[in-house]
Length: 120
Image (tube, rainbow, N blue to C red):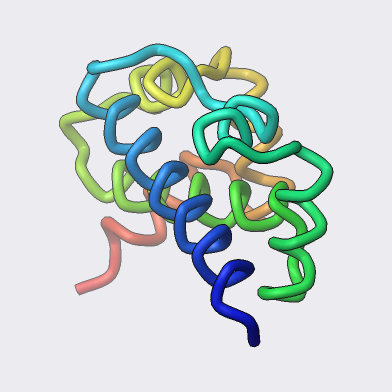
């Protein structure tokens, strides 16, 4: 693999992960879309999308969904956060978050939380 596509992919993932951390910490309330991430890397969004697909075999949306679900699962493991709190932190309305989570995780957030908290 050439050096520049790997740099672009790494920058994309780094910005995405940083954005998710900032959302959770309350530092921002904006979930960055592909266009805003591309602007930060100083490239065209189509070029970014094509590069991500070529280097990872996944679309940028797939990667965003995987990382968002991963963060969601980690937050759901902490009963101090309500599902609504988690939804709002990730810029979702609670009902939309439930649908989104179920689509990608196969369970609702409450089903996931219940399965995790019951495990010894």
